[in-house]
Length: 301
Ligand code: FES
Image (cartoon, rainbow, N blue to C red; front, side, top):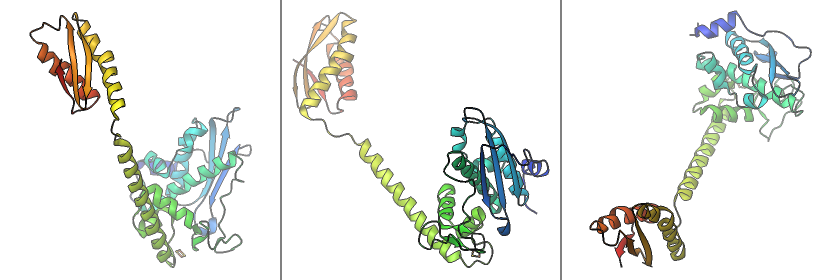
Protein backbone atom coordinates (compact mmCIF):
# COMPACT_ATOMS: atom_id res chain seq x y z
CA UNK A 1 0.00 0.00 0.00
CA UNK A 2 1.36 3.40 -0.93
CA UNK A 3 1.88 5.95 1.78
CA UNK A 4 -0.57 8.59 0.60
CA UNK A 5 -1.24 11.89 2.33
CA UNK A 6 -4.72 12.64 3.61
CA UNK A 7 -5.13 15.17 0.83
CA UNK A 8 -4.27 12.61 -1.85
CA UNK A 9 -6.85 10.25 -0.37
CA UNK A 10 -9.41 13.05 -0.18
CA UNK A 11 -8.93 13.97 -3.85
CA UNK A 12 -8.93 10.31 -4.87
CA UNK A 13 -12.12 9.46 -2.98
CA UNK A 14 -13.84 12.80 -3.71
CA UNK A 15 -12.30 14.06 -6.94
CA UNK A 16 -13.22 17.61 -7.86
CA UNK A 17 -14.33 18.70 -11.32
CA UNK A 18 -14.72 15.29 -12.91
CA UNK A 19 -16.45 15.07 -16.24
CA UNK A 20 -16.59 16.27 -19.80
CA UNK A 21 -16.94 19.85 -20.94
CA UNK A 22 -18.59 20.06 -24.36
CA UNK A 23 -18.02 23.82 -24.71
CA UNK A 24 -14.39 23.84 -23.53
CA UNK A 25 -12.11 26.52 -24.94
CA UNK A 26 -9.09 24.25 -24.69
CA UNK A 27 -8.45 20.55 -24.32
CA UNK A 28 -5.27 18.75 -23.34
CA UNK A 29 -5.07 15.01 -23.70
CA UNK A 30 -2.05 12.96 -22.70
CA UNK A 31 -1.20 9.34 -22.10
CA UNK A 32 -2.65 6.28 -23.67
CA UNK A 33 -5.13 3.90 -22.13
CA UNK A 34 -3.28 0.93 -23.61
CA UNK A 35 -0.20 2.06 -21.66
CA UNK A 36 -2.00 2.45 -18.36
CA UNK A 37 -2.63 6.12 -17.61
CA UNK A 38 -4.46 8.74 -19.61
CA UNK A 39 -5.77 12.18 -18.77
CA UNK A 40 -8.00 14.60 -20.63
CA UNK A 41 -8.22 18.14 -19.27
CA UNK A 42 -10.85 20.67 -20.33
CA UNK A 43 -10.50 24.41 -19.73
CA UNK A 44 -13.16 27.11 -19.96
CA UNK A 45 -12.01 30.73 -20.17
CA UNK A 46 -13.66 34.08 -19.59
CA UNK A 47 -14.75 36.24 -22.52
CA UNK A 48 -11.37 37.93 -22.76
CA UNK A 49 -9.78 34.47 -22.92
CA UNK A 50 -7.41 35.47 -20.15
CA UNK A 51 -8.70 33.73 -17.04
CA UNK A 52 -9.63 30.09 -16.51
CA UNK A 53 -13.15 30.09 -15.07
CA UNK A 54 -13.71 26.34 -15.08
CA UNK A 55 -11.80 23.10 -15.55
CA UNK A 56 -12.83 19.47 -15.78
CA UNK A 57 -11.02 16.21 -16.30
CA UNK A 58 -11.45 12.62 -17.27
CA UNK A 59 -8.76 10.13 -16.38
CA UNK A 60 -7.92 6.50 -16.54
CA UNK A 61 -5.39 5.75 -13.88
CA UNK A 62 -4.55 4.95 -10.29
CA UNK A 63 -5.42 6.84 -7.11
CA UNK A 64 -2.49 9.24 -7.62
CA UNK A 65 -3.52 9.97 -11.20
CA UNK A 66 -7.06 10.82 -10.10
CA UNK A 67 -5.85 12.91 -7.16
CA UNK A 68 -3.28 14.72 -9.34
CA UNK A 69 -5.87 15.56 -11.99
CA UNK A 70 -8.34 16.75 -9.36
CA UNK A 71 -5.61 18.90 -7.74
CA UNK A 72 -4.68 20.32 -11.13
CA UNK A 73 -8.22 21.56 -11.76
CA UNK A 74 -8.26 23.21 -8.34
CA UNK A 75 -4.92 24.83 -9.07
CA UNK A 76 -5.96 26.37 -12.37
CA UNK A 77 -9.52 27.53 -11.76
CA UNK A 78 -9.59 31.29 -11.20
CA UNK A 79 -6.04 31.82 -12.42
CA UNK A 80 -4.90 33.65 -15.52
CA UNK A 81 -3.47 31.78 -18.48
CA UNK A 82 -0.12 33.44 -17.83
CA UNK A 83 -0.11 32.28 -14.21
CA UNK A 84 -0.89 28.65 -14.98
CA UNK A 85 1.83 28.43 -17.62
CA UNK A 86 4.32 28.14 -14.78
CA UNK A 87 2.55 25.28 -12.98
CA UNK A 88 4.91 22.31 -12.67
CA UNK A 89 4.47 18.72 -11.56
CA UNK A 90 6.06 19.77 -8.26
CA UNK A 91 3.23 22.29 -7.75
CA UNK A 92 0.66 19.53 -8.24
CA UNK A 93 2.46 17.17 -5.85
CA UNK A 94 2.93 20.05 -3.39
CA UNK A 95 -0.78 20.89 -3.50
CA UNK A 96 -1.46 17.31 -2.42
CA UNK A 97 1.08 17.44 0.41
CA UNK A 98 3.31 15.02 -1.48
CA UNK A 99 3.22 11.97 -3.69
CA UNK A 100 5.26 8.77 -3.31
CA UNK A 101 8.24 9.14 -5.65
CA UNK A 102 7.13 6.03 -7.54
CA UNK A 103 3.94 7.95 -8.37
CA UNK A 104 5.45 11.25 -9.45
CA UNK A 105 4.67 10.35 -13.07
CA UNK A 106 1.01 11.09 -12.23
CA UNK A 107 1.84 14.70 -11.41
CA UNK A 108 3.97 14.89 -14.56
CA UNK A 109 0.97 13.66 -16.54
CA UNK A 110 -1.12 16.49 -15.05
CA UNK A 111 1.49 19.08 -15.99
CA UNK A 112 1.71 17.68 -19.52
CA UNK A 113 -2.09 17.76 -19.93
CA UNK A 114 -2.08 21.40 -18.86
CA UNK A 115 0.73 22.26 -21.28
CA UNK A 116 -1.14 20.48 -24.05
CA UNK A 117 -4.34 22.41 -23.25
CA UNK A 118 -2.42 25.71 -23.31
CA UNK A 119 -0.86 24.78 -26.65
CA UNK A 120 -4.36 23.99 -27.87
CA UNK A 121 -5.55 27.39 -26.65
CA UNK A 122 -2.74 29.09 -28.57
CA UNK A 123 -3.73 27.14 -31.68
CA UNK A 124 -0.46 25.20 -31.69
CA UNK A 125 -1.99 21.78 -31.08
CA UNK A 126 -5.18 19.85 -31.60
CA UNK A 127 -5.16 19.14 -27.87
CA UNK A 128 -3.82 15.62 -28.22
CA UNK A 129 -0.22 15.05 -27.29
CA UNK A 130 1.43 13.06 -30.02
CA UNK A 131 1.38 9.38 -29.28
CA UNK A 132 4.94 9.41 -30.58
CA UNK A 133 4.44 6.28 -32.66
CA UNK A 134 3.37 4.08 -29.85
CA UNK A 135 4.58 0.51 -29.76
CA UNK A 136 1.27 -0.65 -31.01
CA UNK A 137 1.52 1.51 -34.12
CA UNK A 138 4.77 3.22 -35.22
CA UNK A 139 3.15 5.76 -37.58
CA UNK A 140 5.14 8.81 -36.36
CA UNK A 141 8.35 7.02 -35.44
CA UNK A 142 11.25 9.45 -35.55
CA UNK A 143 14.49 7.49 -35.16
CA UNK A 144 16.80 10.51 -34.91
CA UNK A 145 14.93 13.40 -33.32
CA UNK A 146 13.98 14.11 -29.74
CA UNK A 147 10.52 12.74 -30.40
CA UNK A 148 11.80 9.25 -31.11
CA UNK A 149 10.36 6.71 -28.74
CA UNK A 150 12.83 5.40 -26.20
CA UNK A 151 10.51 3.37 -24.01
CA UNK A 152 8.26 1.34 -26.28
CA UNK A 153 6.24 -0.17 -23.41
CA UNK A 154 5.06 3.25 -22.18
CA UNK A 155 5.53 5.26 -25.36
CA UNK A 156 7.93 7.74 -23.76
CA UNK A 157 10.07 9.88 -26.04
CA UNK A 158 13.63 11.11 -25.57
CA UNK A 159 12.25 14.64 -25.22
CA UNK A 160 10.01 13.61 -22.30
CA UNK A 161 12.91 11.86 -20.57
CA UNK A 162 15.18 14.88 -20.96
CA UNK A 163 12.42 17.16 -19.62
CA UNK A 164 11.73 15.15 -16.46
CA UNK A 165 15.46 14.88 -15.78
CA UNK A 166 15.96 18.62 -16.18
CA UNK A 167 12.78 19.81 -14.47
CA UNK A 168 13.18 17.57 -11.44
CA UNK A 169 16.97 17.31 -11.18
CA UNK A 170 16.81 13.52 -11.48
CA UNK A 171 19.99 11.51 -11.10
CA UNK A 172 19.12 7.84 -11.59
CA UNK A 173 17.29 5.67 -14.09
CA UNK A 174 14.92 4.53 -11.33
CA UNK A 175 13.95 8.13 -10.70
CA UNK A 176 13.28 8.61 -14.40
CA UNK A 177 10.97 5.58 -14.23
CA UNK A 178 9.16 7.09 -11.26
CA UNK A 179 8.61 10.38 -13.03
CA UNK A 180 7.60 9.21 -16.52
CA UNK A 181 7.28 5.42 -16.30
CA UNK A 182 9.96 4.86 -18.93
CA UNK A 183 11.80 1.66 -18.07
CA UNK A 184 9.08 0.44 -15.74
CA UNK A 185 7.99 -2.67 -17.64
CA UNK A 186 10.30 -4.90 -19.69
CA UNK A 187 13.31 -2.73 -18.84
CA UNK A 188 14.65 -3.05 -22.38
CA UNK A 189 15.07 0.73 -22.65
CA UNK A 190 17.01 1.26 -19.43
CA UNK A 191 20.40 1.41 -21.11
CA UNK A 192 19.17 4.11 -23.46
CA UNK A 193 17.60 6.00 -20.56
CA UNK A 194 20.92 5.86 -18.73
CA UNK A 195 22.73 7.31 -21.76
CA UNK A 196 20.19 10.12 -22.14
CA UNK A 197 20.25 10.80 -18.40
CA UNK A 198 24.04 11.12 -18.32
CA UNK A 199 24.07 13.32 -21.40
CA UNK A 200 21.39 15.64 -20.01
CA UNK A 201 23.16 15.87 -16.63
CA UNK A 202 26.38 16.71 -18.46
CA UNK A 203 24.65 19.47 -20.39
CA UNK A 204 23.14 20.88 -17.20
CA UNK A 205 26.57 20.90 -15.53
CA UNK A 206 28.09 22.71 -18.51
CA UNK A 207 25.30 25.28 -18.44
CA UNK A 208 25.80 25.83 -14.70
CA UNK A 209 29.53 26.28 -15.17
CA UNK A 210 28.97 28.71 -18.04
CA UNK A 211 26.48 30.81 -16.08
CA UNK A 212 28.76 30.87 -13.01
CA UNK A 213 31.64 32.04 -15.21
CA UNK A 214 29.42 34.65 -16.82
CA UNK A 215 28.35 35.90 -13.37
CA UNK A 216 31.96 36.14 -12.23
CA UNK A 217 32.99 38.08 -15.30
CA UNK A 218 30.10 40.51 -15.02
CA UNK A 219 30.76 41.01 -11.31
CA UNK A 220 34.38 41.93 -11.92
CA UNK A 221 34.55 45.67 -12.52
CA UNK A 222 36.81 46.83 -15.32
CA UNK A 223 39.56 49.05 -13.91
CA UNK A 224 38.86 52.78 -14.18
CA UNK A 225 40.82 54.79 -16.70
CA UNK A 226 42.52 57.95 -15.34
CA UNK A 227 39.88 60.12 -16.90
CA UNK A 228 37.04 58.02 -15.45
CA UNK A 229 38.70 58.10 -12.03
CA UNK A 230 39.09 61.88 -12.06
CA UNK A 231 35.51 62.42 -13.19
CA UNK A 232 34.20 60.04 -10.55
CA UNK A 233 36.23 61.74 -7.82
CA UNK A 234 34.90 65.12 -8.92
CA UNK A 235 31.36 63.78 -8.90
CA UNK A 236 31.65 62.29 -5.40
CA UNK A 237 33.25 65.52 -4.12
CA UNK A 238 30.43 67.63 -5.54
CA UNK A 239 27.48 65.35 -4.79
CA UNK A 240 28.41 63.63 -1.55
CA UNK A 241 31.23 65.45 0.23
CA UNK A 242 30.78 69.19 -0.25
CA UNK A 243 27.09 69.35 0.75
CA UNK A 244 27.96 67.76 4.11
CA UNK A 245 30.78 70.26 4.73
CA UNK A 246 28.71 73.23 3.54
CA UNK A 247 25.98 72.32 6.01
CA UNK A 248 28.53 73.07 8.76
CA UNK A 249 29.77 76.30 7.15
CA UNK A 250 32.79 74.74 5.50
CA UNK A 251 33.71 73.67 1.98
CA UNK A 252 36.36 71.89 -0.04
CA UNK A 253 38.14 72.40 -3.31
CA UNK A 254 39.64 69.61 -5.38
CA UNK A 255 43.19 70.65 -6.21
CA UNK A 256 44.83 67.65 -7.88
CA UNK A 257 44.57 63.96 -8.56
CA UNK A 258 47.84 62.08 -8.96
CA UNK A 259 47.33 58.36 -9.29
CA UNK A 260 45.44 57.35 -6.14
CA UNK A 261 46.58 60.50 -4.32
CA UNK A 262 43.91 63.17 -4.05
CA UNK A 263 44.90 66.69 -2.96
CA UNK A 264 42.20 68.96 -1.60
CA UNK A 265 41.96 72.38 0.03
CA UNK A 266 39.58 72.81 2.94
CA UNK A 267 37.73 76.12 2.95
CA UNK A 268 35.40 78.12 5.16
CA UNK A 269 35.08 76.94 8.75
CA UNK A 270 36.87 73.71 7.82
CA UNK A 271 40.14 75.45 7.00
CA UNK A 272 40.90 76.51 10.52
CA UNK A 273 39.16 73.68 12.26
CA UNK A 274 41.31 71.74 14.75
CA UNK A 275 39.65 68.54 13.57
CA UNK A 276 40.49 69.18 9.90
CA UNK A 277 42.74 66.11 9.65
CA UNK A 278 40.02 63.93 11.13
CA UNK A 279 37.50 65.36 8.65
CA UNK A 280 39.89 64.65 5.80
CA UNK A 281 40.48 61.04 6.78
CA UNK A 282 37.18 59.98 8.29
CA UNK A 283 34.87 61.84 5.99
CA UNK A 284 36.53 62.83 2.73
CA UNK A 285 38.90 59.90 2.31
CA UNK A 286 36.34 57.38 3.56
CA UNK A 287 33.76 58.60 1.04
CA UNK A 288 36.23 58.46 -1.86
CA UNK A 289 37.47 55.02 -0.85
CA UNK A 290 33.95 53.68 -0.66
CA UNK A 291 32.65 55.24 -3.86
CA UNK A 292 35.70 55.44 -6.14
CA UNK A 293 38.65 53.24 -5.13
CA UNK A 294 39.64 51.59 -1.82
CA UNK A 295 43.28 52.63 -2.39
CA UNK A 296 42.73 56.39 -2.48
CA UNK A 297 44.54 58.64 0.01
CA UNK A 298 43.56 62.24 0.64
CA UNK A 299 45.99 65.01 1.55
CA UNK A 300 45.58 68.67 2.28
CA UNK A 301 47.20 71.14 -0.11
S1 FES B 1 10.75 -0.52 -23.48
FE1 FES B 1 10.81 0.66 -21.70
S2 FES B 1 10.06 -0.64 -20.16
FE2 FES B 1 9.88 -1.80 -21.98
